[in-house]
Image 1 (tube, helix red, strand yellow):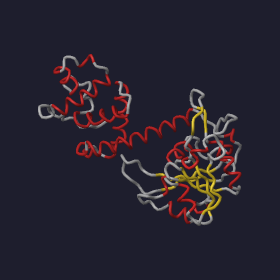
Image 2 (spheres, one colour):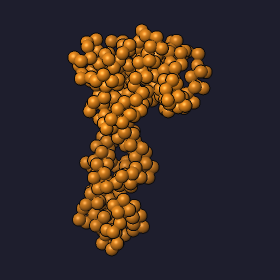
Image 3 (cartoon, rainbow, N blue to C red):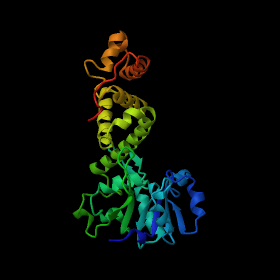
Image 4 (cartoon, rainbow, N blue to C red):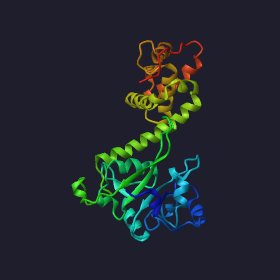
Length: 304
């Protein structure tokens, strides 16, 4: 198995790596800076898209392996190939867009390590040769989400299959091959990012209640509450945040319990049921804050 120190190139996500051009051109340990959007219809966004660079030495690799708050590991992945930068960039440009479940063309942010880790994992191991093309290995950082216990930074190696791709996965003639597993992986990235933003919100606005929830249960709790909120009718991130805050304060079943917060509100607000569900949620949140001193916080632990 190739070691990460044998990486020949780095793939940088311009969104995760602000001022990419300035920072990259100031370095003397890389060459062949190739923004992959540059020859496409997204050329005006080239600095924010995937940027392929050839490494002169291991300096950038060493920096990326340092798990500091401003580390590169959340901004790049590392590649090993005997191919030229030109040939590698030609292959990677096949990944810029893919067909969504309804056949629409969508951008794939494959240079974002979080996206790359989920997406590449969906193909199984080793990766299909047709997907890897000239690459022998693709390393992506693996780190814990902010709602879970942290663990030491590690690099997940994705290796190319030496067998014909058809032996390992059913592929179409298109690159990248996208099936149900790949679409599910991208959905998982979206859910991960949402949960991280909501974790930051709860840590700021419901700190005491959030801290009481055992860390090992937070991920599943977030998923369960998001499912509850969506099933009820919450549609925006703001509404989801309100739902989670209320669940922490008044219990997981604040909306359905016979003696729960929602039941109390309805009994004191004759016109409540005339509001849309989204309007009800906002009004319920406002009412709970106004009447917090007269309401009894549920004894239910916000588990499950």
